[in-house]
Length: 611
Image (spheres, one colour):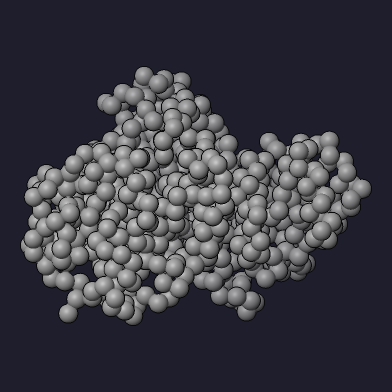
């Protein structure tokens, strides 16, 4: 017997409690979709409709990826020569594993708008530079069409600089009172504008110590500790970014450079791959770098800055310091934590995913404001980020800052854990981003099961399970990427963190809905939260497997408003703003399947494994 409206789906009570629903269409969604000229899809309710739905999804998949998904994709490196020499060898290793062709870098390293728009010049760009304008005009991402590029438009104006990161996080969380949701980063202020706000917050919350950082300097340069309100007064005339200082960080007990066992401060450089920003889709690599100070920790940072700062570029200059002394692999950190009996590593890593996810969700609306032209979503963009996290004494992580061009240079011998992490990360990145196999057939059945779950919750009739083409594209990309994750782990969406993310997304939705500039808001109309509900349910294979659906089409075609028991539809798409009709299996082939086997990273011995 099929699960019909009103039947209880036993596998879903937790999701229902966390999400408040399974993602039924919003009351005003049809009007919004028509206004936005977004086509819609009526999902079938029976398994008989899966083949036709898969064909329709396959056609969407092909259309949105035709720029890069060809038989022999060509990757064009652009950017400053120094960055290209530093990072391209690692990326090239990943491209070679997939048999992708890496073109020669143009002598200037720069492409004009005319070259950027040329459909025959390349299938993907890898920009290696501190600034995108050393590769191409950053205001014309749209000229790439559906071709890939490892640059998210205007990321530097939102999170890829200390002061912009601070402004974006502060703006997103303003008005948020939930201490659990606020715990993902530090309170911060940009001087001199935020001086009065900083003093008021510090007095109200009994803050006694702060850390001041120059806006544009890196590698620990110019950073200092402020530990009195008298000293804080001097920041009134500075342009620094000031954060609250973590006075009780987690410490690693180990031998120091002089052989004496002591406790040392540390932080973490994680590698985060963002493949969509509005709405967010991101992954964190399960291997990364732990950076350790060279001097035993003390609160008197003025006397010894290398006791408080963990930057590798700073600590490696200390006499006698070697890379093995100041960096650990995640594996070594995992073993240390287990040996101390402090926490389970899986729990710690989930906290890392959560902190990064909340930080990136905070940037969705701000990024949309900076995209040009209006309506541009950077659909073909991706970017590797270096996200730095600091841990308190209870191993709770906080995002400190985000780097949009992490250093991938290998060491001279190429055999350290440093090298192993970067090389394998690049291989897994290219396999995930350039996976050419469509997940349309598997996604089609998931969507049919999701539709039955929605109706079993009693949330309306057939219109409740309509989905816009923009959301279908997001779902298809998510499923394709998740099929080739390698050692990447999902940051968002992540079914394990759906409750936390849901609370934050509801806060952002309600906050933006109250503002007059709703057309620039990601969350205000509620569709962003609906997508969160949909993708969370689709990620839960165990729950979906327990949803019993009808054997036939179940009333509704594969992309039409009507259909027979065999799941076929004689209705074609009615154009922009209408419905997406079912495409024939011959016309809607899934993404090209490469004949070459996708190479996997070489097996790793026990002595090399990091995670």
